[in-house]
Image (cartoon, rainbow, N blue to C red; front, side, top):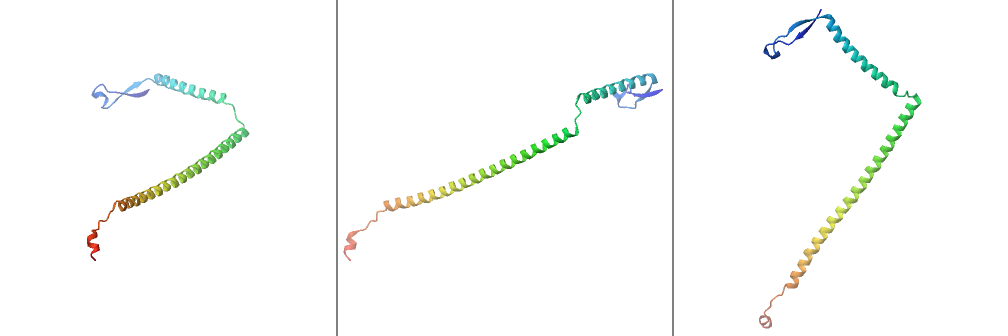
Length: 134
């Protein structure tokens, strides 16, 4: 006879669990059902394996070579893309430097323009009567 643990009626299942006797026949029936289910799973996986065509060694080698070629093409494309990004970064950096240089030149010219405008507005006042006496 096999024994199976059953939950206790008191304490919400927290306490000790009493052992309940189960007939060997019932255990065998439940074990048979589990085995039948496992057999169904293995049978279905065997059918899937039968459906997939068997590949020859040459086909596998061809697939590997094809994948390697694809990886090489992707690597080359990645390198080209990185080079393009580097070139664009360089162009952007040069443009930023040019803009900065132009801004500094503009500020310098504006300062010079302000000096010229102040000089133009400057009108010295000289009293001629004092100069003629000397």
